[in-house]
Length: 258
Image 1 (spheres, helix red, strand yellow):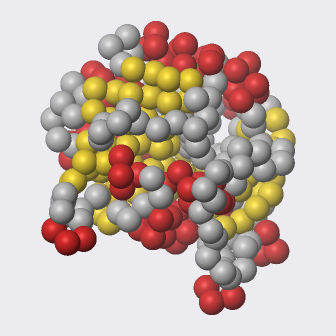
Image 2 (image 1 turned 30 degrees about the vertical axis):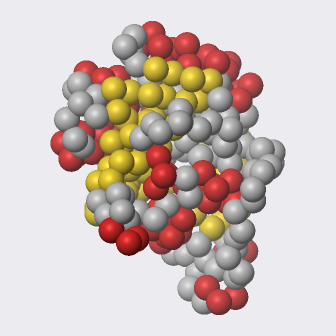
């Protein structure tokens, strides 16, 4: 389905709240839900060939041995485990205690913290050579996503890279025109089957994901592509078209300062 062509002037830009409200959109998987899934999630999603290829591409562009932040690290496989095996220092964050425990087991030399993504901040002065977010925003509202990504430029080193993998609203067959915000960049309440549960997704379009990185994150998108993913039948999940973005923080900020 193609996102509707609605002039952006019809939609006032979403403000970034100083104190983000942490309530998730209705009928999305919750922290408690992920706490019960654990290795079932890894079995269903840990062997996504498109994601593995994207991590390979991302790793090849990173500064060797740099620190990489994995936001919504899940079980640690495949992303954190792959990056750690290639010599990167992995720092993962997830709101599920179960997922954090599995990540620590999968990547013993990594650092993993259990926190809501909107609550977490790096240690003072800490920056990362890379940031990864793969299928990790689905419990957030549009405004919360904008708030989170707006922080990435400060968290990345000059020349640092971000890898984003998400589903685009127009690539879910159940997305209807009336679900889109007036700017055509975001759709709400999209029915989706996920690990045996009927839930709803809140998704940007491909143009919206790109704008999120560039306009909110202050990053430059260097590569963008899509890959299909079909979970195993026993997972009882809808198939996905994953949109991938690799974006870079400019090496010089305004005024020539790093």
